Length: 348
Image 1 (cartoon, rainbow, N blue to C red):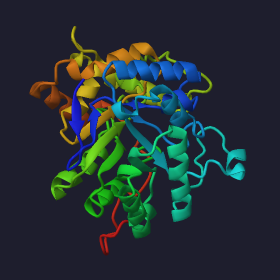
Image 2 (cartoon, rainbow, N blue to C red):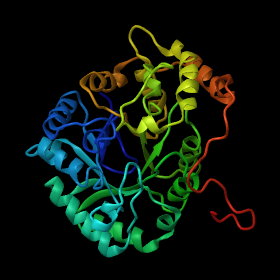
Image 3 (cartoon, helix red, strand yellow):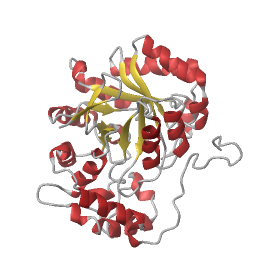
């Protein structure tokens, strides 16, 4: 395992982290708490120290899994968690179905209560990285919210704070403005070989401003596509969120993967190469692959030890992406603020 330290901080994380979305929500198949806790401990044994949860994942379940897994070993791990969704409101729970997005609440009283609840569930007196969950431009603009997070840091209840962007892909200027205007310490984004926009532009924003921003990368395998196991006949379980994607996503993705098979070699799988592509970017602090079985855990935890991609491999990937792998597809339906207003340069 490799370890990277966030810019201008003492927060050091494993280059491959573990996101608890897969163990606590049921959207990747059901995992018992006992199995999740055992897997988290095995991940730590393999060198993983960064664990990314959210208060809304399983309505607090992900944080409780972390507390059970690392009770007595808190000083050996880095906890990242998220806040902002009003998931405990019975009215919101009553209408929650599938991937329905719950209402946000970023008011000071709500955020203060959310922090205390997360600390209790995590059985800790501090959170290493506290993130706005799927923040919108309104939160990037909210001075009061940023001042509140700074006060949590001064109180010693968080070590740093950041923004996790989503759901779905997009949110370009939410990320850019978090970097340019807030110099945010941590930004969590979707970025991978198949889905490079707008992640590349969000990282370039930090370079342009020489910002003290480190990046967490989620969906590094494009919802499993870059693991290289899908075929045109692949089907997903009823409760698997990938089942709801259009069939063209699967068919086109399989064609793209066949053009990336050159990345496979006896000492590196395609899934490991996808992680190495991300780790070639120095601002990437940790990569959060979706892990839901032991085979994936071992494969992905070993990725930093495999051969890095060479210049020719990186160039071939860039050339394929520039031509969309020779596949005609409709434009991506991005979410979020993807354009500036021409009159004044203020986000739309």
